Image (cartoon, rainbow, N blue to C red; front, side, top):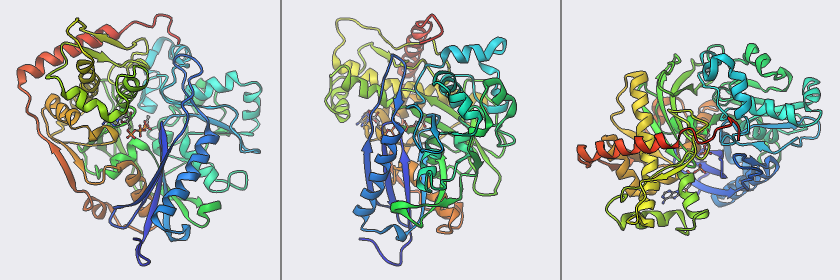
Length: 506
Ligand SMILES: Nc1ncnc2c1ncn2[C@@H]1O[C@H](COP(=O)(O)OP(=O)(O)O)[C@@H](O)[C@H]1O
Ligand SMILES: O=P(O)(O)OC[C@H](O)CO
């Protein structure tokens, strides 16, 4: 039941596989959720695209769905927040509002040769000092450059100012605030920071990188903070302030109340992303992590994070389900894995898009190793789940090397955290407790919090922190000798994935 005196804030989470809209009340509790999937388009091996028009219509549908389930009218919302899959790159025509090409998704590896070429003699580190990022296919700048080089006439039109570039936050804000009828062309620092075009110190587009990648500044959105009113919605949300934008992983940091230096969260979805709050200064990484924005609330000082990005975790469960057909639903993996004691000696390294943190090896490809006739599908189910916890262990180790921070408790969220066997294994291989909050939809919650801060629904971070409540805790119980042996085997398996792709392109 909704209440007339209560304030409500909604958030749209435009993710890699689906879009959802969640309405929250002032206690940060969920009032209603609606969610829809969109198509994954795979034109060639290594290429992944989304139809941005389809995404916009799914977003409109989930907003309508969530409002209907909540029994609310748009005018009862105090604000709308946006959070989104990061890096996924779209160019659209400002006059017609139509995309000029499908969006190129963060997992897409078509820019491998371009990234090698851009790196030249400096290699992956060419733009690291300004952006905190290694030159990898993951980020948006090279994807935009690829589109400008491959869609006929696009560069000329972009130079004339006819084309707009955006990650999904920009696309949604532009459409929500009117589109061709005066839509706002903006992004926030967390999303801009993943383009590889923003300077981490100035929080503005970096002209030297724009010229190195041959990107016309005329097509870029204005960079704003993560929590401020960007504009007022038209259409079904008419009158609602659009008041936050955060990349989904940064939104989860915010929703998990990781406001203190040294606090961290890991979100387990298609991939997994572990972020550690490092305070108001960027900390550079020597161990294969990204230096990235955490959030920026209005005119307050920006907060930075170190991030360990893992490309494939939940997506390996999807592959096990859809490509191998061994399970029918993702939930079936847990009883299958629990039907055996251990992995039977099998390890799976899901380097489907190369390996991200801490390796950044675009030449790696997936391997299944340690096979003998003893290995069954149940052992493989274990290996699928263990691939997630070991990849996480590697980024936790890198966090320690870079920051000296020992993560003593890991806050977790995302679709995979309902898997008890996986979360227990995660606590075991990290040898620290793993905790999940009562509201595990932390991504939407973080975007709602930021939008609510910008519009006076909540006053400050202390008020938000008080909402956080523990739901489940998994405590480590693995013997150290077993952990060490398994870690050693995992490292051997990772080594075997390197160097498979030989031509530097895909
Ligand atoms: N019971 C489960 N055990 C392991 N993985 C699961 C389970 N249920 C869902 N998943 C995985 O979690 C992912 C979905 O999580 P979600 O947080 O919705 O992801 P995203 O936001 O990236 O779309 C999928 O990749 C799916 O394979
Ligand atoms: O949509 P998700 O949850 O898979 O998150 C994707 C990340 O933002 C990619 O950087």
